[in-house]
Image (cartoon, rainbow, N blue to C red; front, side, top):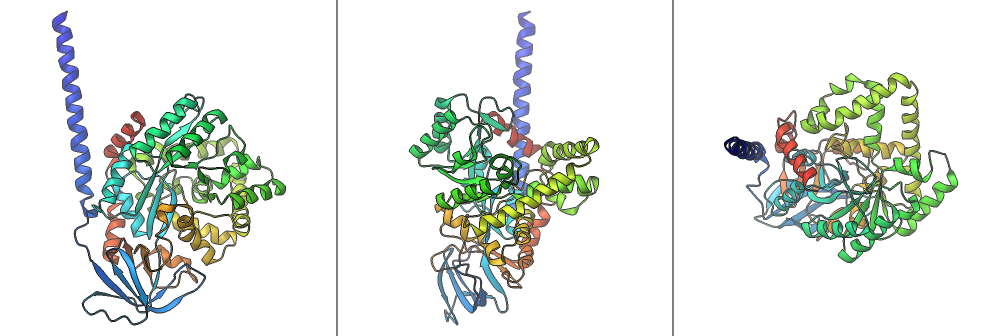
Length: 473
């Protein structure tokens, strides 16, 4: 008997060892496949000559300017600079705008970092944090890889009764305080609060977050009133759909909406609409299998496509079988979202462009242009639309304060386009060049970043990182 137990023990040890070796090999191979993101050549200084600036300090264009970039920052903006040996980037006839921020994303791998850059996104706020995101942030901050500025929320904190493997259930107020301190120490930039937090635990999380000097990014909790979220240290409230579902209780309540907008404006708490991911429900219901064959779907992480996106597809296509009006209701709510976003903008609410890309069929990089298109459809001017992805994030978050406008002293995070985005937003879909911390990505490199992310084969590497996140959140 002892001999058999010994054999079983050695068998388990061997199996664990082989599993560990397999995990290391899979992750190393995945890292090798994304070696194209490694930063090799840098430029200490250069001048973008004769370019038209979209400064985003106002609804204006500064024509035929020169921009001197030194050590990753704008040092001079003036017409006709003469600087001798500096590298020249010809901007004649082109338009230079601040890089875009997507303030609600779910990043699954390094490929997506390149994909975001290819679509002009130079700042990201990741909204479901895991250990691999902390390692990703360290590599980005060490300037090892081409990537947008990267900030990550913690795992999603929810109440003890809110089930789901993607959520960190908080047992009681003491546990909430412990987790806030833990996540701050680990290096997360924000605490993510979720839909099932009861008031006593939420209060404890708020108190500890204030003590730890870390802000909250809140998916509204349905265990408290919507108004509860208008207090420090919450800096942003996510999802216009929750204004409809929680604040308005699915009614067209103009008085309650006006009160909600007033609270937003008075507290200067940002709002992230994420219209793109909600609209994907309409696309699933309308297009069904045709959606799955669209080319852009090839840019979604293959593991999440199977483990997450297909669940959404099955849910809504099966709902349609017994509820023929579901598509009509979802589309009607989307139209309500558009009206609310317009009223928010008119009321002075600080809108933060965010897409929920990486979830459902919202495609990383592509999603920001869908999102901005919805704001345009809602009735915002092009300047107002661009503010949501440039100026507004920098006004809410101190860590983004050196981005969002083209001014001396700001980070050299730009997009160069052939047309004026204040006249044609679609020109931002395919930038000719992207600049990130003063590094120049030309059109050939941008194309490569997009191509490398297409139908990538990293299912198991992603699954390993996801499993780590669920086990050690």
